[in-house]
Image (cartoon, rainbow, N blue to C red; front, side):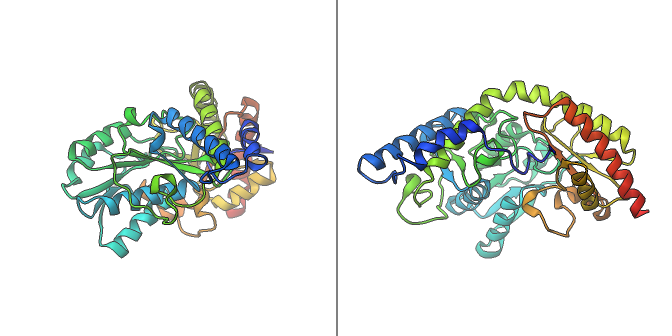
Length: 380
């Protein structure tokens, strides 16, 4: 089997499992408990918080551990917007993750917010000039994804954040897909809040974080005992936080070398797919994209049929966002890029991890060509 669906989830790193194991066994305590078992858990949680903070260039107190990227996005979008007295106006893009889109929809329906969606070009990039034209004195939040989860397009986050900062509006970026591939330092990016998910970097599912600067007001989504500095109540997932911090630190230490190597393999894979499947079209920005993502449409086929044929040949990939799996609707991301609904439904995404090899990707490209030919023959 060749696994090329790392954008959906990654295998758990052995180091993360080993790091979390003590907090599932002897140091299992509640970090809020004032006894030796609880204090041992509290020390582990504090160390994990400091490790995550070091990767993103934040203070430990700026790290809010969550159940994953979806909760982090919800907390950022709803929490910052509802706590900001500037007004009820949000700026975003049409290619955000469902967690951001649905959170904004919640604010529109139930809290009277308005939204401006910035257009994207054919590669999925947002223009900073467009943001400058729509941002207002009453803008409560700008939320633009760092790297897209379907096509891999990377946004000019530092430029966008600078415009928001000049206007006095908080800026959030969903960096779930960027972790392990792109720099996450919040001062370099200029962002006020940044979402992360553990299972994209080799930690178990069910742990993530929102990095939010301490000066940014944040209305909690979960009320209760006041954990996470009263920003996210609930007994903390200490073992998950430790695993996440371990995996994120390792991913950051490997990032530059891994990205450079995988980028070369990806470009060879893209060229091979375009050669073996002549109808294939690469989606997303050709230059500004994640090193480990290549997404195509195959007009004249069915994306789901191609996926099934690829799996039959031992290649695991996806048709786009795993969070929208099972939907019969065309991807809003691909529609925003100007593709027709018919063509958008032929999409297949390949996403590579650091363990990708040249031999695997050569075999994968051959499988793609054969699968597309087989499905096109059936469709024809």
